[in-house]
Amino acid sequence: MQQFDTAINTGTVDPDKAIPELMEKLKSEGAYDKVLNEMQKQYDEFLKNKKS
Image (cartoon, rainbow, N blue to C red):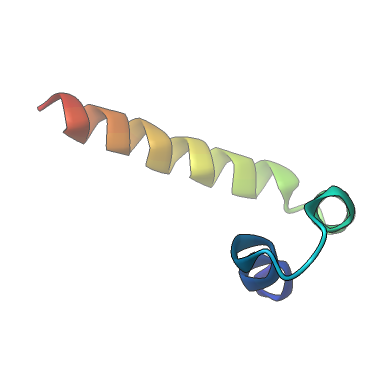
């Protein structure tokens, strides 16, 4: 994941190619659902704190 993170976030790779590669890697390693759930958890926490 980290190998894609910096490159995608800084725009040093073509996101149209890198993001599908990242998604396939996550799915093949069984990590897609884990990452998606963690992202949702963090987003929900952000929204909860924003309303306070």
